[in-house]
Length: 351
Image (cartoon, rainbow, N blue to C red; front, top):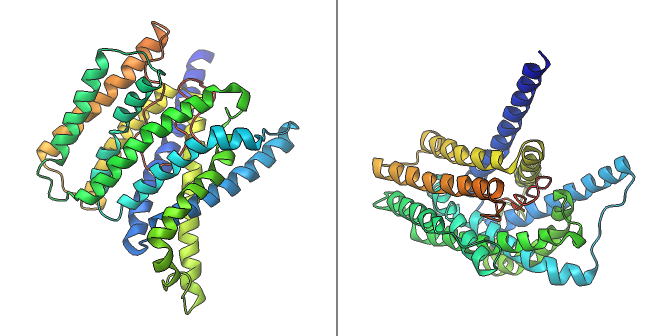
């Protein structure tokens, strides 16, 4: 009797963690799109999110230190600048460009284009020799590429500028996750815990994105009536509140992914991520009015097949042949969010 009860409890826990992950992941995608309709400063929004993530991670580290009685890791300046900075800058550009694209494209086009990140992750994993060459990689690349082409073919809501931004973000994302994998494999750094990774990455991410913000948004934001030229206090408080909500969602996304992987497995997160994309597209069509033809849906199905094959092969080679197929568990979402690595170590997941 104990076994069925334990199975039911584990099932309920897994479903609850998946739903929590869906709430934060889907929520931040629609939040970003909603906010960009009236607040046309995506890079500033990203900087606020990074600041919120740093503050929340610092508070969490302090609480963990008080709870365990063990000091948290603090990197030396040499390791920080030489080993963490490349990952942080790539992450900042990935997230910044992804958020920027919401000014131009729909959620459905963003979701599909961002899914191509797996192609660049695979490419850079091969370049850095983090992954064994495999003939099935060609099939994965063809399925995802053909799916994206079918999805964007004759799309009535296609925007070239936004599409290029997301595609560039996916390319940088490939560099980002490959560098993240290299960073996380350095056990001597002690950044296996996602909270510690968030804490160390956010300041450099902020500094890496700040020059681009100044160049593109600095002048217009300084003269905007939404922040610095407000005539009443309430609009300013409203803007700060809405921006803070996004920062909390970003932090919650990373933490929910960590909980899901640490309590279940990275495979659970991978499979959940595939179904999350389906939910995102369905919600975008029903709530945001995104238009998709039968060919677009077919392209999405082909792309999902490619991602599913990637996940299945990763599981097969890691369990049956003890080979590390992907190096990264594929998770197609904004932002973004952060530190998606952890398919190597079941203890760690995104930051």
